[in-house]
Image (cartoon, rainbow, N blue to C red):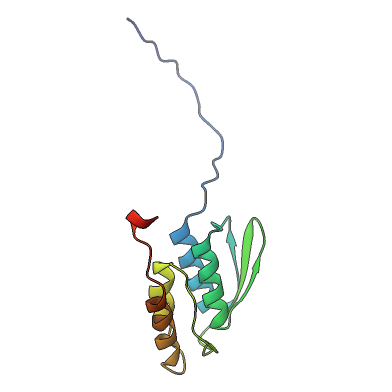
Length: 126
């Protein structure tokens, strides 16, 4: 059998689908930035929505659109959440939100308390 390869040029574009971890990290970073950030093609999932709710609790404003999420960050002026932050079963959000410095340490305790209320899903339980 004989195989012949001809010279050619490959061209085009590829849209990479959103990643849950990248979307959550982008939300955390955007919420800590001053001004507006745009997250293009985020992954919309229960975990990323939990993270959006968490950063809203710290004072960020999020506008969710189909192809992009706009985040107005609070910079160094994080707000103390009014209540326990429910992060669902998002481990990445639990770790990131629990580490956010606020003017009072109570916010960290609230995030951790919510995480203890609902056990995180393990690969075998999904």
